[in-house]
Length: 327
Image (cartoon, rainbow, N blue to C red; front, side, top):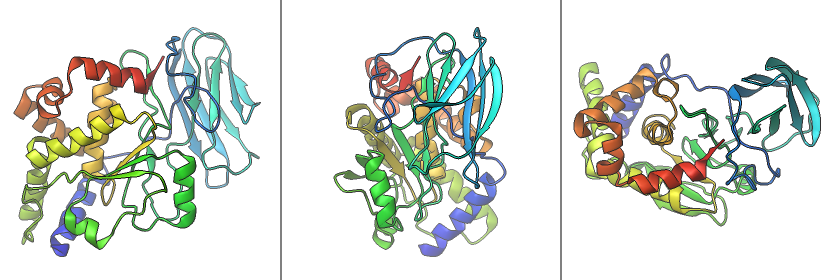
C-alpha cells in the first residue's frame, strides 16, 4: 500500500511539476485586520482591477502589481498607512513592514471598489503547500475573497506555533480528503476549537490498493483515480461534504487538504473556482484539465456535475457566490 502511494505520488509529481504553476497571491476586499472580509459581505461596488497580486520575498519585501480600468490613481495601504501609490497600472516593492501572520494590503482605486490582498502562500513550519484558495477574478469582474478558504498538504507535522497561527487565521473546519491508511499513519493536527471532518475521496473506489508494476500501470492508476475523484461515489460524497461545509460554515475559514495538496485538493479547489465563475484558463493546468474532461464526459457539462454530482442547485450556487465573491 505504501509503495503504491509512493508510486502514484511520483507519477503525479512528474505530471504536475512542469504543468501546475501556483500563482502569486491575489485578492480580498478591505476590512479589519483580524477578519479580512468583515463588513464587506454585502459590498457590490464595481472593482476596476483586472489584475492584482502580492508576492512576498525571502528578504521580507513585498512586490505589488496591479492593473485597473477607468481610474487614474491607485493608493495602497498596509497597517493603516500608505506604502505605495501609482497610476492605473503599476508595480511597487515594499520593505520594512513588521512581521505578521499574513501581511495584508488594501488596494484603493480613485473610484470603484477596493481589494485586500496578501501573498497566497501561508508560511508554516510543518506544511509546505498551505495556500489561500481565493484571490482570483471571475468572468463577471468580481473577485474571490481571500481569507475564507484554504488548501494544504498534510497537517501531521504542524508545530504548536503553526496551530496557533491557524487559530488566528480563524480556521474553523478542516476537511481531510485522504484515505484511511494515510490518516492512520499521519494523523492530522488541527487548531483548537475547529471541527475535523473526514471526506475520503477514494472511499470504496479501490484506488491505490495494488502496487503498479510498470510506468504504464502507474499512469493508468492515476487516470482511474482521477475518474474516481470526479465520478466515483466516494469522490462525489467527499466533495459534496466540502461544498456543503463551505456554504454552511459561516464561522469560516474552511480548510481542505490531502497528502501533497495537489490532486484531490487541486480538484476541490478547481471545482470551487469554476463554480464561482473564475475563467477556465486561470484554474486549469494541463494535469487538472483531464479532470474537467472527465466531469464533462460523465455529466455533459460542469454545471451538470455541480447539480447531479454534488447536488448543488442554482439557489445554492447563487448563495455560494454571494458569500465568496466581492465586487
